[in-house]
Amino acid sequence: MALLGDLPVASFDSYLRDHGGEALETALELAPEDVVDEVANAGLRGRGGAGFPTGTKWASVRQAAADSRAWLVCNAAEGEPGTAKDRALITANPYQLVEGILIALHALQAEEAYIGIKAAFTEPIERLDDALLGARTAGWPGADRVHLVPGPDEYLFGEEKAMLEVIEGKLPLPRILPPYMQGLYATVTDPNPTAVNNVETLAHVTHILRDGALQWRSVGTAEAPGTMVFTVTGDCTTPGMFELPMGTPLRTLVCDLAGADEIQAIFSGVSNAVITPELLDLPLDFDSFAEAGTGLGSGGFMVYGPHRDLVQVTATLAEFLAIESCGQCNACALGTAAMADHLHRLVEGVGTEGDLQEIRSRLDTVTAANRCYLPVGAQLTIGSMLEEFGTAFADHVGVAADPDVAVVTPKIVELGDGQVVYDRHYARKRRDWSYTDAQGDAALPPGLAQGPKGLTQG
Ligand SMILES: Cc1cc2nc3c(=O)[nH]c(=O)nc-3n(C[C@H](O)[C@H](O)[C@H](O)COP(=O)(O)O)c2cc1C
Ligand code: SF4
Figure 1 (tube, rainbow, N blue to C red):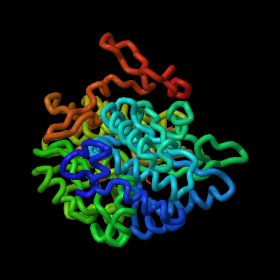
Figure 2: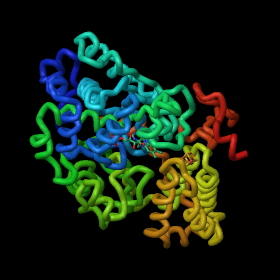
Figure 3: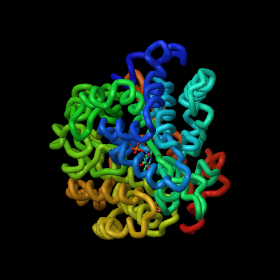
């Protein structure tokens, strides 16, 4: 339990007493490129969803910044359904994250660092404020160049190109070029390459510099060293967060620790193909999951038992993606909405074979000219369900779902002591990013002057 620890770290002073600051001291004694090498030698892979090697990302940003200035962004948006680990990590120990950010600032020789975090995450924000105050008061180099940016609730806030927009004071609409080509406050002459890293990734950096790459990589597998913090919710007896060595079997996490018994389907968020029970012996690492045709995502597993209606599950996840699609790319805006509509018709019992054909044809086109990965997630989530559970969809033609078996959007607000609280306001969110009020009228969330999708969807 290197990252989560047994108990929350109470204060900056107690962190200092438990080796806090030693990793930063070690890093500052090294040349920036040697810190990058240490992280690369540790084999750290990003915990934000794609498992991209952090050392490689940092080396590319440094190279791209040879004639420009570099920037750093810590992604604490945590918008993926079924995931709550970044909030748990910040609440348990915000100090190791701040230390990791300062190490990254030095390694990248970056101007400033921004932490993009949802304004709704009030407790983690308070903990980060405390950690930043402690670091500034202690005079940790770079601490006065780290800024908190509270952002909107939208899923796309966590998409790295959209997060840069929010930090610049705009809406969470992904820009076209990746952050290493068009970073924060980029101009035609200054691309300002930016490294965007997940909370957990940067927290690991502290442990790599403290323990040394060799020691750090003694846990986990050769290709995916270290631990990862996994979230398990849904049809299991003890939903929660579990920090495990990478390579641990999925079965240990989902069945032994979270107490799932009979399983029909598992999702690791909404960016990857469904995981069927035959895959329970897969080791929890990026490559094994990719070879099996799915992905680890950010390690948040949503379990669906045998009593769940899988068409309803698919419709719920599809609706989430239809709502969250920002509407800048027509194929994504229209395709995610159409697929969700056809799935709702099947759930309501008015669907036909024609609805299924429409979904299949939208799956082929939904990613056309996409600026971001969201519609790829829709393609994988919905497409894999049709492939794996085709009979359930065919049987739903003309047959309504059981109204007594609910399927909620698994957007986690709180997870602790074996209890999970989902965002009850989400059911009121509309596809133009407004919310209906109790009377069913549109109510705009604070911070959004207009539903940006209204521009293209009409
Ligand atoms: C729609 C969408 C939402 C995302 N949401 C998050 C998020 O909430 N947190 C996160 O760390 N990464 C999120 N990502 C991935 C980021 O774009 C980015 O790859 C990640 O922050 C990189 O960090 P890492 O290299 O440390 O994994 C999202 C990606 C997409 C396409
Ligand atoms: S692909 Fe979809 S979510 Fe991504 S920018 Fe385009 S419309 Fe928005």
